[in-house]
Amino acid sequence: MTDGIDTTAAPSGPGCVECDATGSWWVHLRRCAECGHVGCCDDSLSKHATAHYSTTRHPVMQSFEPGEDWFWDYRTSELVDGPALAEPTSHPTDQSTPGPADRVPADWRDLLG
Image (cartoon, rainbow, N blue to C red; front, top):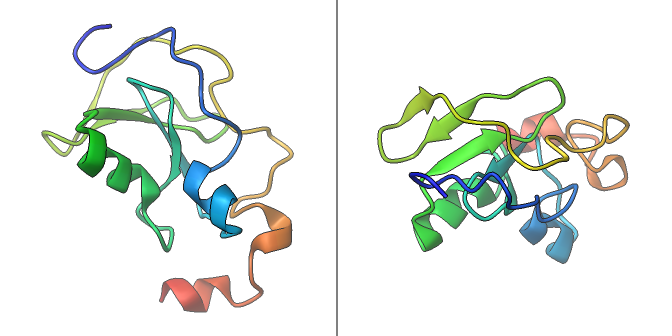
């Protein structure tokens, strides 16, 4: 592991751990580059990825969206370069965004307001 990144840590699953546990939904997903925890982004209602950083102090996350490979460092609030992480590097491509489809309310845009 180097500077908050462990390239061997597998993602915790295909969706936000906390949203899945409560039956909630998310806009986009982020993956902790240190432990693999998958949480929802700050555009989501619950902001679980940032909450994970606040709790664990794991400093770097990567987008967990298909086709995106950027990293974010919470310590500096800047995009940073990072190595390839353990597969899979995104949620399944057939998973809706926002998602999961069966839990996203019809008025989701209004809820994010």
